[in-house]
Length: 165
Image (cartoon, helix red, strand yellow):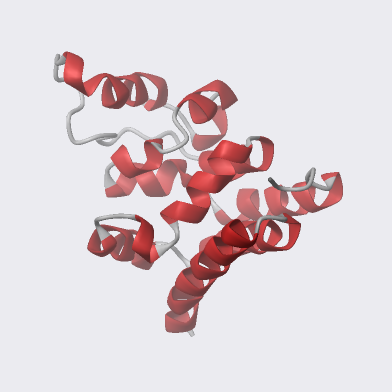
């Protein structure tokens, strides 16, 4: 379990995220199955309905909390557009924070190529905002396992930050 997040640290990280990611209404494809009527696609349909025509800053916290792993279901463009909503949600919800650790840890997902592609599309300010959140988690976490996962996530993000230089 993480220690309670320090309000000042959370505000600093949130400001960094807000400065790094533009607020623009997203009108592109959200998931690979947008609009398809199929009960097996409920999670994707819920994300499509919740995110369509919104800015990342307009996504309700309940959507993030209800879909902590929702980012993996998004198209590359939607991932980039809505990532800051999940990053900020991670400051409020431990389960979302843990999902961010796993998302940015290469060994935790089956599509490393997809995540690499998504990371390459982010600019250096965006990567630094992600890194700031992960660093906070590594420092605030009391679990050795989660600290180790956070360190792996930081190392992964830093490989892309180094490529920017």
